[in-house]
Length: 166
Image (cartoon, rainbow, N blue to C red):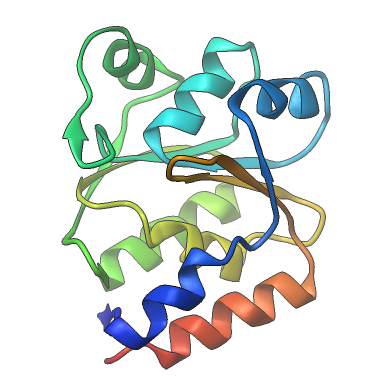
């Protein structure tokens, strides 16, 4: 288990990729043949609704800490396959989240419902996602972050992860 100290919160507010609008998100990815991992309810919903099918979806049925209901919940719950349910409290990365993420990336498919909070799952994804893959995660009040995976992104994610309290 890793715990996010207050000192790292500012570092995590800096996007790991390009910040784009919800509308740009779909147009940037529609029709592209990439290994796509989406972390977060709102960006996952926008992608799926727009006809872009992520290979992996990680969500927690919350947007800005409020429960997701209605069409967003129906679309996410009904997407692809049954969810693996992982427990992960806010502000931490549990070992179960890390192992499940690694397994889904190795299989190149999956859906994870996080009971608690999925925000830090993007960090884990960026550590294990292969170069050339695309990771999308939400940036509150700004849109989504589109990350094209490479060694530089992975190294930054790993540095942040290793700086977290054990």
